[in-house]
Image (cartoon, rainbow, N blue to C red; front, side, top):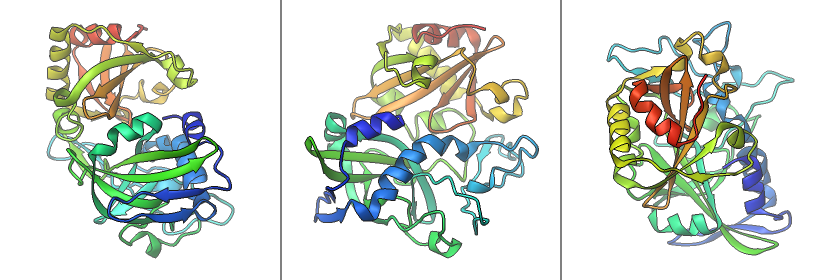
Amino acid sequence: MRETDLLEAIGDIDNKFIRNAGKAKTRDLRWVPIAVALLSVTVLGLVFIPKLFEKDSENPSLKPAEIKQTLSDSTVETGGVYVPAVEIPESTEEGTTLDMIGFVVYKGNIYTQSMDYTGEEAYKIDEIVGEYLGTAKGNIDEWSSQDEYAVEFASSVAGEIYAVEGYDTGFRICLRAEYEDGNGPGLWIQFLDCLNGITLSKGSELFEDRLRVRELTGSVQWQSHEDWDYNTGNIKNADIDEAAWNEFWDAVDNGDFFDMWDHENLCPVISDMSHQAHMIINMNDGTKVNIRMIEFEGEGYVGYQGLNWYYVKVPKEIFDKVYEACGGTYS
């Protein structure tokens, strides 16, 4: 969900309450104390989350100081790629600001925001909100110390945290909150995924083991890169032959992950190039998976929107069938 979508969904809640609807017990959280968490952090997080994997052009092994990640080598001895663990900066230099993202610390790992669901979409997936895990403290901001980060459920967003049924808690948890705005009561569910500090080798390790794409795909839609980039909607249904769909995912699941930063020509323009399409997979459990497909110099690349820079290369003749069905154009 883009920034404007979230703002419209939450609405005018300046003087209202946000209530976390824990299934075992409900506790009220006033809007004022967590305004930074839900607007400044959540909305800014949607703006700045790509920086989580943004590279430093002068030293590509180091990320910006805002969210430090140390990567000695993108290709590890197992043959896969290592997605570096998020490391919170020990301090913020005077005069600088920390580009906060929505995150929660759980079992020593950092889970960062992925999909947000509000309104009917949130109520639909409410049935897969599972076991209560704890309360995110919402205690982290630009001025927090390293010690404050190193605490279970330390977070930049406040609320009750739950497991998501059907997904390993080592990969996905969620925040569930009820709120009231000028339109009445509503529900907001934010998924938080742990896709850092891990090694990915084959595509199946992400798309099947974690996201369960082939198991749960219900319908497929697409959006052009321009419409996605300018948040203009214009989402269309995709007409994909079953044989082509299965061939495509066979290739993705068996393909090798690699770090796009290693592609010296492609990486600098990956965000701006027009020859890409966005696939939206509507899952049978009510969730959505956003897939990014890029065509560059006669090659096809497939990635998960929540995992910048890390893609699977797919043979062109297989890639093209699905890419074209999703409105993809060619360089």
